[in-house]
Image (cartoon, rainbow, N blue to C red; front, side):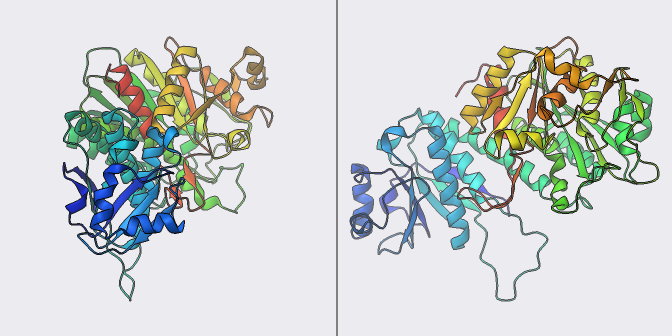
Length: 496
């Protein structure tokens, strides 16, 4: 079911709702919550006095009071003096996730004004983003349970101030939340559904819905374009590749180009992966999902920016026609590549996309990809790795990531690492071995960037999670949508 949030300028004390979600910081009860507590017959204060709820981060407590609320869900924000945009977003996500498990189709959320230490626009945005994140679930491929299933959370009324600034922040957060939901819905699909053709049709529908320009190249068109690196990855699969270009023209300025890796399933090819957890390789198109999710947000927000999205999409399969270790292929740029490891396929399809990006004369290009296992070793599942040719661009991305709650950490692209990618028989090879694996992959991509600032985001550790977390369910995270949208809005001189 679709999920929506609506700002309702109303006092929460008398608001009738099946569930009131109340975000509270550690310490004493804010004065404005006194009327809410009175409406519950003092139940909130009794829970606090008993120590059953203290307001610490991610803590929740459900009470069933008399009055207009069937239930009240208390959600911890953490220390009052430390409350920021990220803490508000997190509390809203925890609240929505808990509300979903309670099985209410509609709820209300309230953040007491005393704890809103950030600008109202930021608060409105953070709440909307968090609620969308926590409410997400995917049950479409399951049969209905015989004993009945709880209804999905369809709407949350945000009981906030009657402020144009707060409402505008909510509008932005709602669009970003919808973009993240769009990305997660694409990521979660199995690869027998989400093929390169499916990704292309999804992009086409998105373009038609919002009026984007679009180009979809099928295999003959990709061959005509001489994208030899992309074709080499695709040649082992019965599924044909697609190359996708979307363009949002909200400005006449040179575009920001976003490039997303769209490998809809990655077996590793001839350099085949171990069977354990290979099913997770459906997530190897998470970069493509991030780009499409960002365009969903752009279509809703219509900012004054110019953005191009490029997605090379294919499967990576072993077969009698698959590319082999030791083969040499010619890229779109014309550079020859010795294929050392067919499981280093993401960089092969991205390099052709980065070469294609030159025709747009971009102001900047950013690629996003589940590229290397090495980044998981380096940064775990907490941060995304970033590297690039332009320090200013990398810093812009870091700032956008901090605002979005999608943190990145820079890695160096010193010339010393370039030697790892030297080939004996071709211009470059596609794998430099285990040492500095994420950096050598970045260096490979840098070889195909010409004439514009570029940065690379490695999301192999952050694109999906294999565990249940307080703010989200096991599975896809939609990483990149919030970061990209923050980056694009900042470039468009619209700062929140």
